[in-house]
Image (tube, rainbow, N blue to C red; front, side, top):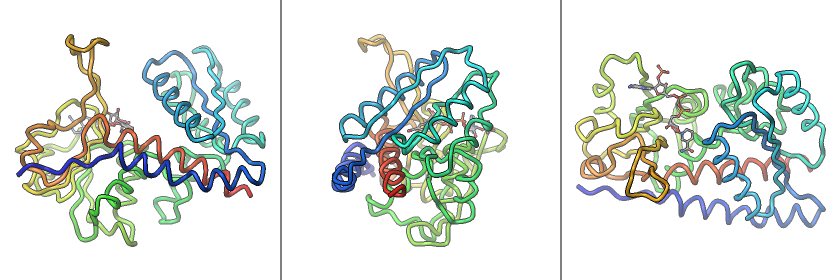
Length: 292
Ligand SMILES: NC(=O)c1ccc[n+]([C@@H]2O[C@H](COP(=O)([O-])OP(=O)(O)OC[C@H]3O[C@@H](n4cnc5c(N)ncnc54)[C@H](OP(=O)(O)O)[C@@H]3O)[C@@H](O)[C@H]2O)c1
Protein backbone atom coordinates (compact mmCIF):
# COMPACT_ATOMS: atom_id res chain seq x y z
CA UNK A 1 0.00 0.00 0.00
CA UNK A 2 1.23 3.48 -0.74
CA UNK A 3 -0.48 6.09 1.36
CA UNK A 4 -2.32 9.08 -0.01
CA UNK A 5 -0.48 12.25 0.97
CA UNK A 6 -2.74 14.65 2.84
CA UNK A 7 -1.98 18.07 1.38
CA UNK A 8 -1.88 20.26 4.49
CA UNK A 9 -0.40 23.16 2.59
CA UNK A 10 -3.19 23.10 -0.01
CA UNK A 11 -5.95 22.77 2.58
CA UNK A 12 -4.39 25.59 4.63
CA UNK A 13 -4.41 27.82 1.52
CA UNK A 14 -8.11 27.04 1.04
CA UNK A 15 -8.89 27.90 4.68
CA UNK A 16 -7.05 31.22 4.37
CA UNK A 17 -8.74 32.04 1.06
CA UNK A 18 -12.13 31.41 2.65
CA UNK A 19 -11.35 34.09 5.25
CA UNK A 20 -11.25 36.71 2.46
CA UNK A 21 -14.97 37.62 2.42
CA UNK A 22 -15.12 37.96 6.24
CA UNK A 23 -12.03 40.21 6.27
CA UNK A 24 -13.54 42.30 3.46
CA UNK A 25 -16.85 42.63 5.25
CA UNK A 26 -15.10 43.69 8.47
CA UNK A 27 -13.15 46.25 6.40
CA UNK A 28 -16.41 47.69 5.09
CA UNK A 29 -17.34 48.40 8.71
CA UNK A 30 -13.96 50.04 9.29
CA UNK A 31 -12.49 47.10 11.19
CA UNK A 32 -9.13 45.56 10.39
CA UNK A 33 -8.55 42.38 12.41
CA UNK A 34 -5.48 42.89 14.61
CA UNK A 35 -3.19 40.28 16.14
CA UNK A 36 -0.68 41.19 18.85
CA UNK A 37 2.19 38.72 19.18
CA UNK A 38 4.49 38.98 22.17
CA UNK A 39 7.87 37.31 22.17
CA UNK A 40 10.18 37.34 25.18
CA UNK A 41 13.85 36.52 24.70
CA UNK A 42 15.85 35.21 21.74
CA UNK A 43 14.65 31.66 21.15
CA UNK A 44 15.37 31.14 17.40
CA UNK A 45 12.41 28.78 16.83
CA UNK A 46 10.03 31.27 18.50
CA UNK A 47 11.38 34.05 16.29
CA UNK A 48 10.77 31.92 13.19
CA UNK A 49 7.20 31.06 14.28
CA UNK A 50 6.35 34.68 15.02
CA UNK A 51 7.80 35.78 11.65
CA UNK A 52 5.63 33.16 9.89
CA UNK A 53 2.52 34.40 11.69
CA UNK A 54 3.40 38.01 10.79
CA UNK A 55 3.78 37.06 7.12
CA UNK A 56 0.44 35.25 7.10
CA UNK A 57 -1.24 38.31 8.63
CA UNK A 58 0.31 40.61 6.02
CA UNK A 59 -0.87 38.41 3.17
CA UNK A 60 -4.45 38.35 4.44
CA UNK A 61 -4.78 42.02 5.38
CA UNK A 62 -4.71 41.36 9.13
CA UNK A 63 -2.77 43.90 11.19
CA UNK A 64 0.04 42.35 13.18
CA UNK A 65 1.72 44.08 16.09
CA UNK A 66 4.81 42.27 17.31
CA UNK A 67 6.19 43.10 20.76
CA UNK A 68 9.77 41.86 21.07
CA UNK A 69 10.82 41.96 24.71
CA UNK A 70 14.25 41.23 26.19
CA UNK A 71 14.96 37.99 28.09
CA UNK A 72 15.16 39.89 31.40
CA UNK A 73 11.55 41.18 31.13
CA UNK A 74 9.83 40.58 34.48
CA UNK A 75 6.56 38.76 34.97
CA UNK A 76 4.83 41.93 36.10
CA UNK A 77 6.09 43.86 33.04
CA UNK A 78 4.72 41.15 30.78
CA UNK A 79 1.41 41.06 32.66
CA UNK A 80 1.15 44.85 32.30
CA UNK A 81 1.64 44.58 28.53
CA UNK A 82 -1.03 41.87 28.29
CA UNK A 83 -3.43 44.10 30.27
CA UNK A 84 -2.76 46.99 27.85
CA UNK A 85 -3.42 44.74 24.86
CA UNK A 86 -6.61 43.43 26.51
CA UNK A 87 -8.07 46.94 26.41
CA UNK A 88 -6.63 48.05 23.06
CA UNK A 89 -9.45 48.28 20.46
CA UNK A 90 -7.09 47.70 17.53
CA UNK A 91 -6.18 44.30 18.94
CA UNK A 92 -8.64 41.44 18.50
CA UNK A 93 -6.27 38.55 19.24
CA UNK A 94 -3.30 38.24 21.59
CA UNK A 95 -0.68 35.53 21.57
CA UNK A 96 2.30 35.20 23.85
CA UNK A 97 4.79 32.96 22.09
CA UNK A 98 5.86 30.02 24.26
CA UNK A 99 8.20 29.19 25.85
CA UNK A 100 8.69 32.27 28.01
CA UNK A 101 11.86 32.45 30.16
CA UNK A 102 11.85 30.31 33.34
CA UNK A 103 11.44 33.26 35.72
CA UNK A 104 7.97 33.93 34.24
CA UNK A 105 4.97 31.77 35.18
CA UNK A 106 3.53 30.95 31.76
CA UNK A 107 0.14 29.90 33.17
CA UNK A 108 -0.25 33.26 34.91
CA UNK A 109 0.41 35.03 31.61
CA UNK A 110 -1.90 32.80 29.55
CA UNK A 111 -4.72 33.19 32.07
CA UNK A 112 -4.32 37.00 32.00
CA UNK A 113 -5.27 37.19 28.31
CA UNK A 114 -8.89 38.34 27.93
CA UNK A 115 -11.06 35.38 26.95
CA UNK A 116 -12.40 37.27 23.91
CA UNK A 117 -8.82 37.75 22.62
CA UNK A 118 -7.33 34.35 23.51
CA UNK A 119 -6.83 33.28 19.90
CA UNK A 120 -4.20 30.68 20.88
CA UNK A 121 -6.77 29.09 23.20
CA UNK A 122 -4.14 28.18 25.81
CA UNK A 123 -5.77 29.74 28.90
CA UNK A 124 -7.37 27.49 31.50
CA UNK A 125 -10.78 28.95 30.54
CA UNK A 126 -10.36 28.18 26.86
CA UNK A 127 -9.03 24.66 27.51
CA UNK A 128 -11.82 24.00 30.02
CA UNK A 129 -14.42 25.03 27.46
CA UNK A 130 -13.00 22.47 25.01
CA UNK A 131 -13.19 19.76 27.66
CA UNK A 132 -16.84 20.48 28.33
CA UNK A 133 -17.73 20.61 24.63
CA UNK A 134 -18.34 24.38 24.57
CA UNK A 135 -15.35 25.38 22.47
CA UNK A 136 -14.65 29.07 22.10
CA UNK A 137 -11.12 29.44 20.78
CA UNK A 138 -9.50 26.10 20.02
CA UNK A 139 -5.67 25.97 19.90
CA UNK A 140 -4.62 26.21 16.28
CA UNK A 141 -2.75 22.91 15.94
CA UNK A 142 -5.47 20.58 17.28
CA UNK A 143 -8.06 22.60 15.35
CA UNK A 144 -5.90 22.24 12.24
CA UNK A 145 -5.77 18.46 12.69
CA UNK A 146 -9.58 18.29 12.98
CA UNK A 147 -10.02 20.39 9.84
CA UNK A 148 -7.43 18.31 7.96
CA UNK A 149 -9.35 15.14 8.80
CA UNK A 150 -12.69 16.67 7.85
CA UNK A 151 -11.48 18.08 4.55
CA UNK A 152 -9.73 14.84 3.65
CA UNK A 153 -13.01 12.95 4.09
CA UNK A 154 -11.78 11.07 7.18
CA UNK A 155 -14.57 10.70 9.76
CA UNK A 156 -13.22 9.82 13.23
CA UNK A 157 -16.63 8.50 14.32
CA UNK A 158 -16.32 4.99 15.76
CA UNK A 159 -12.58 4.91 15.00
CA UNK A 160 -9.80 4.33 17.49
CA UNK A 161 -7.65 7.47 17.54
CA UNK A 162 -4.31 7.07 19.30
CA UNK A 163 -2.38 10.22 20.16
CA UNK A 164 1.25 9.98 21.21
CA UNK A 165 1.94 13.13 23.26
CA UNK A 166 -0.06 14.74 26.07
CA UNK A 167 0.93 18.41 25.93
CA UNK A 168 -1.58 21.12 26.79
CA UNK A 169 -1.18 22.64 23.33
CA UNK A 170 -1.58 19.52 21.18
CA UNK A 171 -2.30 16.11 22.73
CA UNK A 172 -4.79 16.98 25.49
CA UNK A 173 -7.01 19.40 23.54
CA UNK A 174 -6.94 17.14 20.49
CA UNK A 175 -8.04 14.14 22.57
CA UNK A 176 -10.97 16.16 23.85
CA UNK A 177 -11.96 17.33 20.38
CA UNK A 178 -11.81 13.81 18.93
CA UNK A 179 -13.94 12.33 21.70
CA UNK A 180 -16.71 14.99 21.62
CA UNK A 181 -20.21 13.69 21.10
CA UNK A 182 -20.71 15.48 17.81
CA UNK A 183 -20.36 15.13 14.08
CA UNK A 184 -16.76 15.01 12.93
CA UNK A 185 -15.65 13.53 16.26
CA UNK A 186 -17.05 10.53 18.24
CA UNK A 187 -13.72 8.70 18.24
CA UNK A 188 -12.49 6.31 20.91
CA UNK A 189 -9.31 7.99 22.10
CA UNK A 190 -6.12 6.68 23.68
CA UNK A 191 -3.25 8.94 24.73
CA UNK A 192 0.31 7.64 25.12
CA UNK A 193 3.28 9.47 26.62
CA UNK A 194 6.80 8.91 27.87
CA UNK A 195 5.59 6.76 30.80
CA UNK A 196 3.60 4.41 28.55
CA UNK A 197 5.57 1.14 28.83
CA UNK A 198 5.07 -0.06 25.24
CA UNK A 199 3.66 2.63 22.98
CA UNK A 200 3.53 0.28 20.00
CA UNK A 201 0.88 -1.90 21.70
CA UNK A 202 -1.45 1.08 21.35
CA UNK A 203 -0.25 2.58 18.07
CA UNK A 204 -0.82 -0.77 16.33
CA UNK A 205 -4.50 -0.54 17.27
CA UNK A 206 -4.92 2.95 15.85
CA UNK A 207 -7.24 3.64 12.94
CA UNK A 208 -6.05 7.25 13.22
CA UNK A 209 -2.57 7.73 14.68
CA UNK A 210 -1.44 11.19 15.71
CA UNK A 211 2.19 11.79 16.60
CA UNK A 212 2.96 14.88 18.69
CA UNK A 213 6.15 13.84 20.41
CA UNK A 214 9.12 15.88 19.23
CA UNK A 215 11.31 12.86 18.41
CA UNK A 216 12.36 12.58 14.74
CA UNK A 217 11.07 9.43 13.03
CA UNK A 218 9.74 7.92 16.29
CA UNK A 219 6.78 6.13 14.64
CA UNK A 220 8.16 3.22 12.58
CA UNK A 221 6.30 1.12 10.04
CA UNK A 222 5.95 -1.84 12.43
CA UNK A 223 4.12 0.40 14.92
CA UNK A 224 1.33 1.10 12.43
CA UNK A 225 -1.78 -0.89 11.58
CA UNK A 226 -2.11 -1.45 7.81
CA UNK A 227 -4.49 1.14 6.36
CA UNK A 228 -4.25 3.58 9.28
CA UNK A 229 -4.43 7.35 8.81
CA UNK A 230 -1.28 9.05 10.10
CA UNK A 231 -1.18 12.67 11.25
CA UNK A 232 2.35 13.84 11.97
CA UNK A 233 2.36 16.94 14.16
CA UNK A 234 6.09 16.80 14.93
CA UNK A 235 8.48 19.42 13.62
CA UNK A 236 12.11 18.55 14.30
CA UNK A 237 15.23 19.97 12.73
CA UNK A 238 17.94 17.44 11.95
CA UNK A 239 21.45 18.19 10.67
CA UNK A 240 21.75 17.94 6.91
CA UNK A 241 25.00 19.18 5.36
CA UNK A 242 23.46 18.84 1.86
CA UNK A 243 21.13 21.75 2.67
CA UNK A 244 22.29 25.35 2.40
CA UNK A 245 21.05 26.11 5.92
CA UNK A 246 22.68 22.93 7.31
CA UNK A 247 19.49 21.26 8.53
CA UNK A 248 16.12 20.00 7.37
CA UNK A 249 12.74 19.61 9.03
CA UNK A 250 11.33 16.16 9.70
CA UNK A 251 8.31 14.88 11.58
CA UNK A 252 7.84 12.33 14.34
CA UNK A 253 7.00 9.65 11.76
CA UNK A 254 9.39 7.62 9.62
CA UNK A 255 7.60 8.98 6.56
CA UNK A 256 8.92 6.76 3.73
CA UNK A 257 8.49 3.44 5.53
CA UNK A 258 5.16 4.32 7.16
CA UNK A 259 3.78 5.51 3.79
CA UNK A 260 4.04 1.90 2.63
CA UNK A 261 1.70 0.73 5.42
CA UNK A 262 -0.73 3.61 6.00
CA UNK A 263 -3.71 4.62 3.85
CA UNK A 264 -3.14 8.37 4.27
CA UNK A 265 -0.37 10.44 5.84
CA UNK A 266 0.57 14.07 6.39
CA UNK A 267 4.06 15.10 5.26
CA UNK A 268 6.49 17.32 7.18
CA UNK A 269 6.83 20.05 6.08
CA UNK A 270 3.57 20.97 4.27
CA UNK A 271 1.31 18.97 6.58
CA UNK A 272 0.03 20.12 9.96
CA UNK A 273 2.38 23.15 10.15
CA UNK A 274 0.60 25.31 7.55
CA UNK A 275 -2.76 24.34 9.09
CA UNK A 276 -1.63 25.76 12.44
CA UNK A 277 -1.00 29.16 10.87
CA UNK A 278 -4.25 29.07 8.88
CA UNK A 279 -6.33 28.21 11.97
CA UNK A 280 -4.67 30.97 13.98
CA UNK A 281 -5.67 33.43 11.26
CA UNK A 282 -9.17 32.00 11.35
CA UNK A 283 -9.31 32.52 15.14
CA UNK A 284 -8.20 36.16 14.75
CA UNK A 285 -10.93 36.84 12.20
CA UNK A 286 -13.46 35.13 14.46
CA UNK A 287 -12.31 37.33 17.37
CA UNK A 288 -12.80 40.46 15.28
CA UNK A 289 -16.26 39.30 14.17
CA UNK A 290 -17.22 38.47 17.76
CA UNK A 291 -16.41 42.04 18.72
CA UNK A 292 -18.99 43.54 16.32
N1 LIG B 1 2.84 21.36 13.35
C1 LIG B 1 2.70 22.36 14.24
O1 LIG B 1 2.19 23.41 13.94
C2 LIG B 1 3.17 22.14 15.63
C3 LIG B 1 2.60 22.82 16.69
C4 LIG B 1 3.02 22.51 17.99
C5 LIG B 1 4.00 21.55 18.18
N2 LIG B 1 4.56 20.95 17.08
C6 LIG B 1 5.57 19.90 17.20
O2 LIG B 1 4.93 18.75 17.76
C7 LIG B 1 5.82 18.05 18.59
C8 LIG B 1 5.21 17.98 19.97
O3 LIG B 1 5.02 19.27 20.47
P1 LIG B 1 4.51 19.56 21.95
O4 LIG B 1 4.60 21.01 22.18
O5 LIG B 1 3.22 18.85 22.15
O6 LIG B 1 5.70 18.83 22.76
P2 LIG B 1 5.92 18.54 24.30
O7 LIG B 1 5.20 19.51 25.14
O8 LIG B 1 7.39 18.36 24.44
O9 LIG B 1 5.20 17.12 24.48
C9 LIG B 1 5.73 15.97 23.91
C10 LIG B 1 4.92 14.79 24.34
O10 LIG B 1 5.51 13.61 23.80
C11 LIG B 1 5.73 12.67 24.84
N3 LIG B 1 6.95 11.91 24.57
C12 LIG B 1 8.21 12.38 24.47
N4 LIG B 1 9.08 11.38 24.23
C13 LIG B 1 8.32 10.27 24.19
C14 LIG B 1 8.64 8.90 23.99
N5 LIG B 1 9.89 8.48 23.78
N6 LIG B 1 7.63 8.00 24.00
C15 LIG B 1 6.34 8.40 24.21
N7 LIG B 1 5.99 9.69 24.40
C16 LIG B 1 6.97 10.60 24.40
C17 LIG B 1 5.89 13.49 26.12
O11 LIG B 1 5.58 12.68 27.22
P3 LIG B 1 5.59 13.28 28.73
O12 LIG B 1 4.36 14.11 28.84
O13 LIG B 1 5.54 12.07 29.59
O14 LIG B 1 6.85 14.07 28.86
C18 LIG B 1 4.89 14.60 25.87
O15 LIG B 1 3.60 14.23 26.30
C19 LIG B 1 7.14 18.83 18.52
O16 LIG B 1 7.93 18.29 17.49
C20 LIG B 1 6.70 20.23 18.12
O17 LIG B 1 7.70 20.94 17.44
C21 LIG B 1 4.16 21.22 15.83
